[in-house]
Structures are given as structure tokens and as C-alpha cells.
Image (tube, rainbow, N blue to C red; front, top):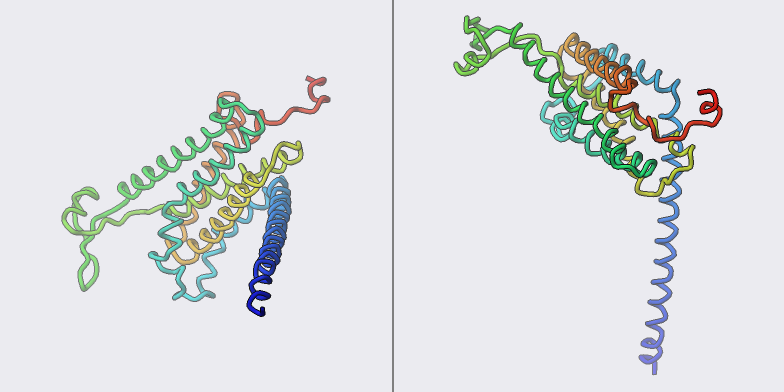
Length: 292
């Protein structure tokens, strides 16, 4: 009889447990959704502020110019001081790939959901193609500068012995070292990616203000871009603290800022360009139409 009671109570108990677990899952999903919506709204408002974007440029300049002073106040044995650390290998060395992947998904969703036009979407995505060309061109220019300004040295126990080998290829083939002026490509790339992502992500505030569809997938992709932008800022600070010579870092950041100005600050405002972020996505106010 006791066994029958226990056996009879079993299914009901499991049903109550499943019900409680179901309620708990629903509550957790509701909380996660609420946090996602709240976080995306606040981040969009922050990145969409023109004043804060101007301050962000000043922040990046301060990081590169004054950040190296922190090397006297931080632990030189931390993991971020090693060239072979996880973040340096997996993220900094592939910063443009990460940026294209995350930002490309965001631009694709925002533009297509706002316009439903493939041609307009492709035009806005072409800004990433231009960015890739800028990155490749800058990298080759930095190597050319190093070749033109460098000399060949042979490392010896007593120091370095200068050789008269004319170029990098013959120097390295002889087992020596080629040393020239090396513009920091990491500082350039991280600065350029930070400015580019901040400019592209700022569109989301206007997107939300126009009441366009903004479901969970789009908001999640947006927040992933915000997190990646925060990571690039942190890794830029680590780079200027632990790696490269001071002028190499400053020149790299200056070139990255100049590349942003030539594209986002100048060319993209012209009619024969890929267009600035948000261009053609939102209807103009009626007052401006009448004025025109």
C-alpha cells in the first residue's frame, strides 16, 4: 500500500517540478530580455550623442598620448605585457576580421530592416570594403617606410654589427636583422576600428527613434558590437602601455585618425561615395521637404 502511494505521488511531484522549472526559465528569459532591451537602449543613447562622440575622439587621443606614462605604475609581469598573450594573438592580430564580422552583421540588419532594399544594403556594406583597403594599404605603406629607413644589423654577443646589405630581403636571407622606423600597425588598426565602430553604431539611436523593427537578434548584435568596441579600447590602452616606442604609437594612431577623417569625416558625405552611416535610411521631416 505504501509503495502504491509513493508510486502514485511520483508523477504529480515531477509535474510540479517541471512546472516550477518552466516558470523559472520564463522568469530568467524575461529578465534577460529586459536587460537586453534596457542595455541596448542606453548604449544607443550614449553612442548616438554627438557631444559624447567628440569627447570619444579626445579620449582616444589621451589614451595614446598619455597612456604610455602608466607603464611606470603597472605590473610589467602581467599577462597583457607579453606579445604572446591570448588577447594579442586572438584579437589584436585579427582585429579587422573581428570588426568586419560583428559590424558587418549589424550594418546588414539595420540597413535591410530599414529599407528592404538589397542595393542600398550593399552600398552601406561597401564601407567595410573601403576599410579593408585602407588597412591593407596602410600596412604596406608602413612596411615601405621601414624598408626605406632601415639598416641591416648582425646580432653579436658584444652588440649589433652594421652590414651594408641594401634591402630587407637580402638582410633576412643572410640571417641578420633589419631595423627601421616601424609605425605601430596595431595602434593604427585599433584606433581606426574604434572610430569606425563608434561612427557606425551611433546610427542605432536614430533607428530606434524612428520606431523601426528592433527585435532581440538586432539588439543582441548591437550589444556585441558595443562589447567589442569596449574590448578594442582596453586593448589599445594595453598596447600603448606595454608595446612599441612612443613615436611609433603616436604616428600609428594619427594615421588611423586621419584615415577615419578622409573616409567618414569627408568622402562619405559626397554623393559619389558609399554614403555616411544612416544616409538614406530614415525619412526626412516634412518641414525640411517643404523647405527644399
